[in-house]
Image (cartoon, rainbow, N blue to C red; front, top):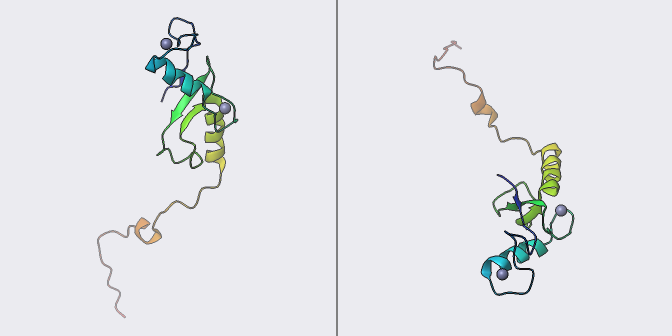
Length: 106
Ligand SMILES: [Zn+2]
Ligand SMILES: [Zn+2]
């Protein structure tokens, strides 16, 4: 996924710098004022951010929404380095003994 950047108010692509009723402007302002779960600061403008989906399971629960790209990358590193619960490899099935049945008489 590529990070997004919110254009500053009053710039060509940014929201109006004065209060307005445009939905797009409202959406940008809402995202900009959202608190990044990583650093607890607003996303703000002119900063790379990612929109985390609720099914991105490697972020802490309840943190779906915009994250600063840098904060999310930190989070990702922590996640990668955290001891992961043993991968669920059914040991019995991991060993393939081949199709031949060896009959060792008893
Ligand atoms: Zn507007
Ligand atoms: Zn942050």
